[in-house]
Length: 195
Image (cartoon, rainbow, N blue to C red; front, side):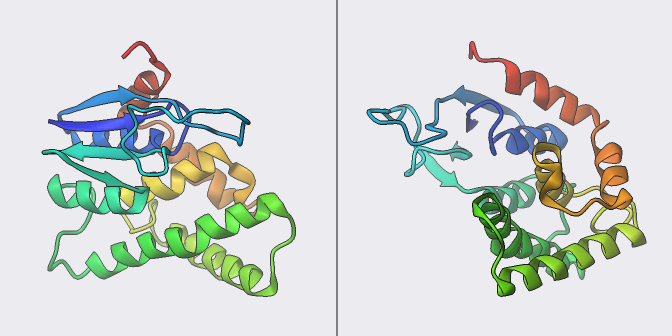
């Protein structure tokens, strides 16, 4: 049995969405996370994440952490939301994972703190150009097929729409992915806190 360690309205919500899209058999272990630095705040001892954050999953006694690694692991374990090893589109899939982790997440964090450095601003502009270009070619980031990449990038827009510039293509994309049945199931589970 796969267990997702989940805190409502956090980065682990996108893992709920992914697991629902994959049709995976899983259990949710609701845990608390420290969302801000609180003097005397204690980490949840039930949470196996080494930093006491989410997402984390446990499979066969092994704990895996961090969204990018979990997306890669889960889409390799369950077929349907990513190109498989050997598929020519696999490199593009891995590139999007890397761009999210190496560019988008750090830039979004930096935007909370103030103006971007010139290097960050250039990286952000290039990612914006690439993202809009991909959406201009197909309804989803990798063309005609909805993939885990859409969950990763789309969940950022759901949580923080102003992370990206005010272009209609982003709003149309957000509207398109927001009506998926698996997302509705995930949001219902996200809100449930009685286990």
